[in-house]
Length: 395
Ligand code: APR
Ligand code: PHB
Image (cartoon, helix red, strand yellow):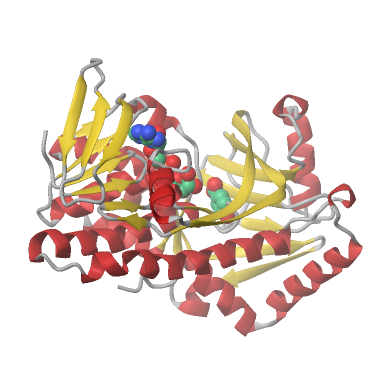
């Protein structure tokens, strides 16, 4: 088999890159080691920045998002007894959409299986080769157990945090990794309950952070901060609702309860690996960086990476110019570090660290002071709004 761009991974990064290249006349093949049902069932975050929505529309996969997505013009921030609304539209003229990453992935897969290029599920032993030459290859075993070779001009590792691509880049370049593991996790639930709030609520509470989000007018997505050692079996539905009530409650207002359809505990980390390229192997999305979910930057960063990379690859493969691929890693990393800082800042402002993990009441007072500053200052609100709704993609 031969293609121009061999893409490893059918998450949002790999699928959208394939689509961006397709509409600009570049061939690709996407190789995914899981099956379609598994990829489409993974529950992830659900906030799309303005540029993400525009990119999805531009490549013809925005129809269901426009019909079913919930347009949100702000968020609520809360400390006990006080909830403040930030109006993003007034603060920075940009807004966000609530539409699950799972739905974005389903839309991208449906379009790709319909219109191409090829998307192969259930492949194993995926391995890039010769990436320091102009004729890289990917070897793999297809779903029927047959050994295959895909010859390419370029290989893209969009294979997530546990993929095969990043270790190759790191080993070949002597790359550098930055990492912070946070001393808390999120317990997330999906519930068949109408959201009791118009916009998302991000709440600081001495017991820990809580977030009220949603997926539709009848489905809520909620999170509570828990200790990383907590086990999901120890959190009955009632215990989860009680914690949500305690942390999100306000006098005269409460969380709407309903049957919980999914619950899981997610660890929180920040991770950046550089560079994002070795020879003709490029990294995009979670393969190169992870952010904690506070602020929902993960998917949007993956979209920003592949938007930049698609432009660079079109220039390389159609115009034979290397300037944009040479600039890709540094250009992408500037925005990645901005989002890494914003996610860390939101996380640090909103999560309490237990005494056992070294936290104390001094930290709490600093957090409350920072939150009150955001409540009171239009400049502080604007800084949050610009970052939350997504900074422009530098090209
Ligand atoms: N071979 C083929 N496919 C692989 C391999 C491999 N060796 N290793 C991993 N994959 C696949 C995974 O099964 C997954 O479908 O690569 C895909 C990577 O997708 P994501 O993990 O969703 O990463 P990305 O596309 O970069 O999207 C980033 O996803 O994790 C969330 O919060 C994150 O929202 C962010 C977004
Ligand atoms: C979600 O809806 O899953 C979500 C929303 C906002 C966040 C994180 C997750 O900051």
